[in-house]
Image (tube, rainbow, N blue to C red; front, side, top):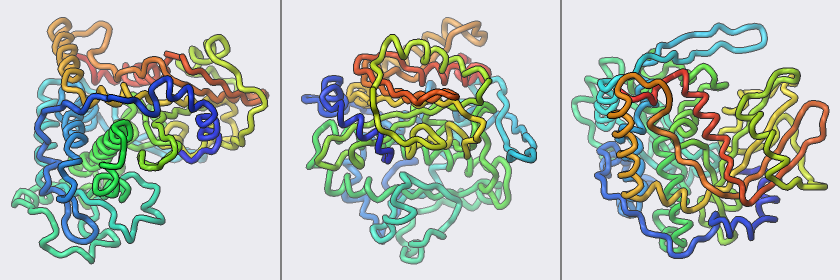
Length: 447
């Protein structure tokens, strides 16, 4: 959950606007209409039984989210991120006296075979991956604020000693072969709040709250699966699955494959604010937050420049606002450190944070069979028209939010920080950022 008091304070002040924009409660939302099969990786017998689990009690309620997560790892338009993870050339950048070295993936031309290879790898991963919820006793402390955790830690969680052998999913003989071939065998532990929601909170929630939680659950599953996929394919590291995670492309400031997948594929990193997983009685909304920082005297990124140029014309400046922003303009948001790097150097005097409230219509469209059918048509048409040589354009863009509430915190060198808000803005700089980030990688070119 976003813990920044300034974000919560100013969102609460605009509760009426949030409601008008459809970001809090929307009556008569359509029910999820997805009809696709649930990928075998999420089947019930991939989930732990026994101590602190009980997934079989509420698995049916999880199905809409599992169907969405399944589309995220099977639809052609969603898979190029994974193909780049499989085939990108590992390039090591050596560290300097004031920075740590890192690995990034250099692009190689995607292919139809690459997509099919990813599908096969995900089917193989389904034979060995294990899902579980953090047991109640361990749901505080270090596990409380983590949406999910992935590790090649076979039976080494603090609570693993409480599981019996029969509690583990059946592992085929293929698991032994995969491990022998250098594949990691990952486990994924999910925040206890998800289990509480599906077990006892689901029926008490409005459809708006249900949609918010189901979306967060689906995204968290695939976020962790991005880590698990890297562990499984075993690209470097001994023992298998322990190799250093790369930066998906060299412009990323930190290696965090889950956030990379969310940003590139979904267009944003989303989290709850004004509530936890939609279950509190007070108003709850989902927001996305993106922070960019650049050194004083250096040109701002193009997307930032476009944003700054339009802020004063399209938004209302908040006067006499109270906020304490130290190294980072907005604290506590998911992905903040990923956007700005592991630390904010004193030379980074300029930064901007963009906070969008997420409309329910945007969330609900991910659960619509009709919407997915439209996306398949766009992808297919682009491939038929452009073939293998694309001069311009991309077949897939993460969907924009449309009109919604936006808040911008701007801090420029030697100037007072500024806070701007608007409830009618349609600008979506997140999408422009990702278009520029993926252009050189070319993973969304048709093939």
